[in-house]
Image (tube, rainbow, N blue to C red):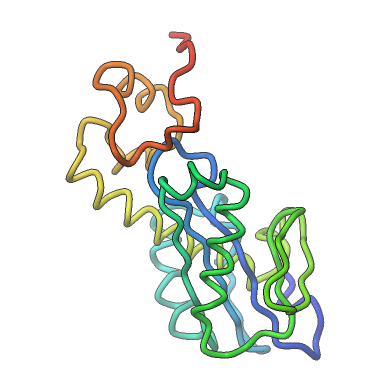
Length: 196
């Protein structure tokens, strides 16, 4: 059972990202502030949910939350500043979009770059512990999936509508066959020996 909040007396924003381990496209982060009486039995870490469940949850979270924001860092910036810093930047951009200022940021993971003097706490596997982080994980994942599905229409040979640019055998084989494209992260190891 997920906790609704980390501390009772502060406005909390849960933050998470999606696409960190992908070979192409952006890293996308979300920040979500939930009301203190929010309830949803289905909500969980987005990785533990089906695509259908995430797509059901997304509009419910958007409707019920106090505020949410989405931050995007594209592959060219990722190549310039590295994926860890890009993840932090995406979270900062998501927090920038909130129309209510949080008093505490709940960050999924073990590291974060402080944001404008707002207190933060890093929670390992936070998306399976705290509801606002789980909500952020759903928003970030569904937002990024939509981006990759749109990019699939431009580059169908990589089948991003299915693999979302994760380093699957199928995706790596397509890179091996067709080469990379403008959306691939050039600093990532795009090709490794593929064992059949």
